[in-house]
Every structure is written in structure tokens, then in C-alpha cells.
Length: 405
Image 1: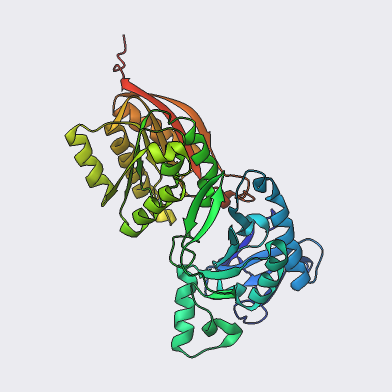
Image 2 (image 1 turned 90 degrees about the horizontal axis):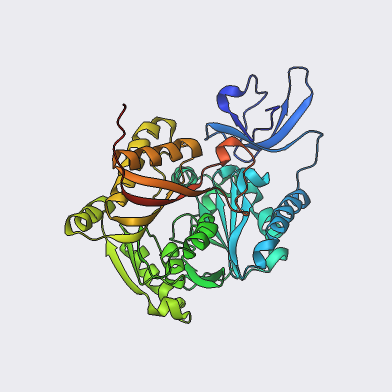
């Protein structure tokens, strides 16, 4: 706590004076009864308190929340100069609003909650957001854990703190979106399904890496595995790729990827690129490509998180290794491998070593060109906040085996 970590786990609480409800303000003191911090209490979560403020005591009210949201928004202003209207406004703990994520998509805003402790303060959050961009609508998304809490509350007909009145996909302000909404990212147009899309509708954290990829794609054939709605694919096309293959397990996501190509047909390079979609299991489909002799100049591997819990780490490392090998099997020589991990429990160093070892086991020479982390709107303020890492690697042919003489 004294080192500034934003979470207090249940087992870390030495003494609690009274039981609390979700959203109660928990005031923390040290052994000498000196004020330490104040945070949001959540009796249903192993993260029992999410720290809002530490140091000298402050009054936590609507003006306090508005000031925190405004400060976070001001840090994102440089993005507006990049022809970008899709970005993260509030990045939870890293913007000192733990458990709260706010994403902007053009004239729409999505608020996502990772703890029901935010329920009593939703009206304050909405009030703090409206003056910043005057959004047409504000949509509420709930994490799976919070959805479970609301489901139990509804079954018990509980209405404490407004729990039973809230649902995933609910419109908090304005009219519901008639469908996916459009936004701009580095001059490209994309759509986001605010109600049913993964996360809040789009993976905004890969914006900078999509832009990096674009610079490597002129005249190339590109395979985008785990493509979702085709973010990397559209950038590759604008970068001059001759053909782009988008592969994903979700037919709905791939349909959105095709629409995202249509949204950008005004770019001559996007209109000229051949776009193929493949729906199914990534490992099975790529194995089929390998067996048919299909090869690509650029292979992008941006999977969902393989390690959501500490117990998943070793299994996740095996899955990442298998994924990298899969990509190398269909990568031309020379070729560009783009491999990402969004698992916070897999460190950047460990991921880099894994990629290099897998290439060595596959007897492919590799030179890492760049390893990237978080963009401006996804800052890191504590160790667990660092989840994203992406490797751009130049890959050659079969390396000669090392022989000791």
C-alpha cells in the first residue's frame, strides 16, 4: 500500500471495523491510526479495495471524479492531431480510477466497469464525461465478473446501489446506437459494435502497432491470424499489400472486417488489395495452408490472452510457442513476423525469449527489429498494468545448426 499499489486484497486487511457494501468508500489507516488511503470497497471481489487516493485526506465527490476524468482526457489530446477519434479516455488504475475504463468512438462513449463498486458513482462518471466531448450517447459495458454479480442481485430482487437496474449494453445517456458506430484512426474509418463487440467494441491498444505494420506491407502478401474485425488487415492494405487474408473463429467479426474494408475504399491502395476471409480454428486452418504450400511475406499473430490467471502461465507459454511455430510454418523467407501478447502474466522479456527460442527450434534465422509496449492512451502506473507487448521480427531461411568444435 505504501509503495503506491492500487489494489488491496482481502487477505491484506488486518482489521475491518464494519461490513461494507459494494461502492462504500473504505478509509485505510496504518498501525498508528494514521490515514493511508481511501478506495472503493467490493465485498464480492478478491481485490477488496481499489485505491482512489492516498496521502492527505480528500473529499471524494462528483467534482473529484470530474477532475480525475478531465485530467485523463487532457493527456490524450495529442491523439486528436492524428486524425483519430477512437481512443481510451480512462485506463482504470493507470489513470487513478481503478476498475473503470472509458473508450471514445467518434461521437459515442463506452463506460466499462470491472467492479460493481462503481455502480453508485455512475451518474458522477456520466456527469464528468459529458462536458468533455458532448457525446451523442454513453453506453455501459460490464465485465463478466460484474455481470455475474448483477445476475445474482436480480435473482434475489436486490436493488441496493442500483445493481438490479443496470445491464451490459445499456445506454446511460442519449439514444441507443442503431448499429455499429464509425470512428477514425490515423485517417482510416472503422466500425465498433458498442453493445456486442469484444472489450468495448474494438482493440484500441494496437493502434500504434497497426501503424508500424503499414510501413512494411508495400507489394507484400499478408496473413492476419486472430484478425477480429480486421484492424491490422486494413492498415496492411493501405500500406500497399497485394493481398490480405483475415482469419478468425468469429464469422460476425469477419463480416465486420469486410465492412471495414468497404469503409476505406476511398483509399486507392485499400480498393486495390485482394481481401480474403477464412473462418475457423486458427491452428487447423494455418496447418492446411502449410500443407498446401501457401506462404506469406508478412504474418500477424495477435491472439486473445492465453494466461488470465497465474495457474495458466505454463500452458500459455506452450500455446504462444505453438502459435509462433504456426506462423513461421507459413512465413516466406525473407519475411516479417508480427507477434503480440496481451497476457500481463507473461513479461516482455519472457515473451521475447520464447519467440527467439521457437524460431531457433524451427531452424529459422530471426532478427528482432522492434519490441513495443503500450500506446499513449494506455499508460502503465503499476506492474500488473503492463500487459501488451508486440514483436516485429525479420525472419530468414533455415539457420545452420550450431556445432561445437
